[in-house]
Amino acid sequence: MKNRNIFSKSLYLLKTTFLEFNDDNAIKLSAALSYYTIFSLPFIDYYNHLWILFWGRSHNRAIVRANK
Image (cartoon, rainbow, N blue to C red; front, side, top):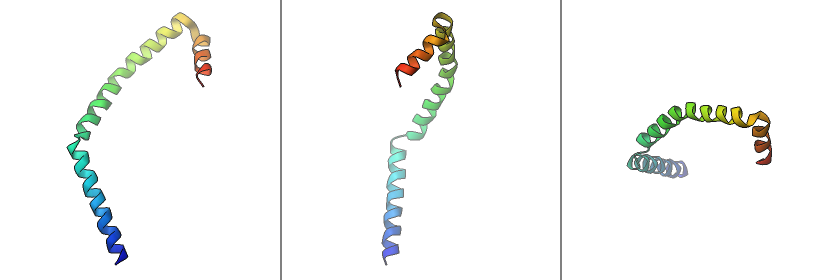
């Protein structure tokens, strides 16, 4: 009897989670987020190279150490 109660609660939780996930349109939003992330990575790398070009690697390492 106890196993059936756990099973029904688990099934209810999965069903509710799926419905809320679907209502929030999470699949479309996560696809958009990963799309913009992938296409922004070259620009981040470009700005990092510009930073190193103007201020050098030692300045970059000093900032990283200061933020730890």
